Length: 325
Ligand SMILES: Cc1cc2nc3c(=O)[nH]c(=O)nc-3n(C[C@H](O)[C@H](O)[C@H](O)COP(=O)(O)OP(=O)(O)OC[C@H]3O[C@@H](n4cnc5c(N)ncnc54)[C@H](O)[C@@H]3O)c2cc1C
Image (cartoon, rainbow, N blue to C red; front, side, top):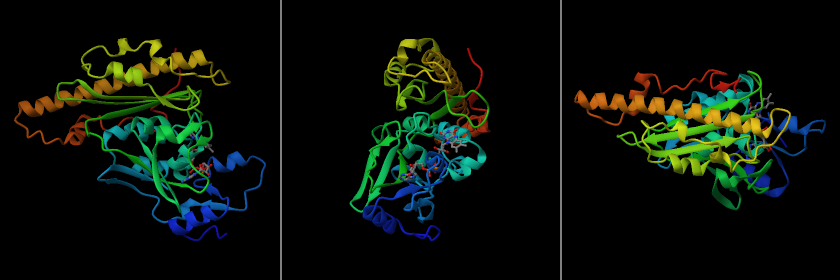
């Protein structure tokens, strides 16, 4: 197999259908997983497939091609709802890892501590799989079945991650707790995405948590409980430990299950406070524009930029919690 020549998606899928092939993207999970074993003979390097490294807006929302790296996500012009995903991108390994590693590889590797999963769960991501038999899409929730286990069939390739349309007023935040500043596996991570109506009532609440169960999950009971409340109420006091009862964090070298739950509670409170702070700022900015006879043309991205809230702390480590409790 020629490992350097560009190939079409069609011929890659034919190759996958013909014979068992190991799929390689950035290789940052693939090679460490080999440990002492030699590289398999049949490797399909998807970075050779033309057209997979794209991030684009279309009629159905947003699409992140399977060849897109974490650095591509960081550099892409995306609405504020993607700020959680961008913050996670900054937390994946080091800049060198982000330059090579793909978002798709992070999902296909299906680690319970994969930083990409909670932000993409919060964005209601869907996974597109292609084979010579055709194409299908599954929700990210249904794609990851367990640690290192996905719904992908042997002859299928993940070709894209699709994000449904999302309001410009939606705000996304991500945080990861690690035991040191760089190159660290998450002890706990969470992503919150909030949207409000013009009165400041919560119209959309999405909270996803990783490293606290075999598969990262959305906290649907907590989401439902917060929905329709005003951002001017004390939302943080409404979050109680019982809201995390669906989680089953393990005890391991990085922390006990109890520690993870306590850390997560703090993390969710902080993310919620941060989202609410920015939602209030956006609301008062819009109110000012109406008072001043502004045209209220829905250019909330512009408003957020003016307020400095479109750019969540994106520099390495700034979205990270280190010491707590
Ligand atoms: C030093 C270091 C630090 C790291 N730090 C972090 C971290 O902080 N957070 C984190 O989440 N991860 C971290 N990782 C893990 C890794 O970098 C990420 O999971 C990365 O996103 C994997 O992408 P990749 O392109 O390198 O995937 P690869 O290693 O190429 O592939 C990973 C798996 O997915 C499969 N695969 C890849 N693409 C496809 C596709 N399109 N269709 C079907 N199957 C596919 C491969 O066959 C393989 O099984 C780290 C890794 C290293 C080496």
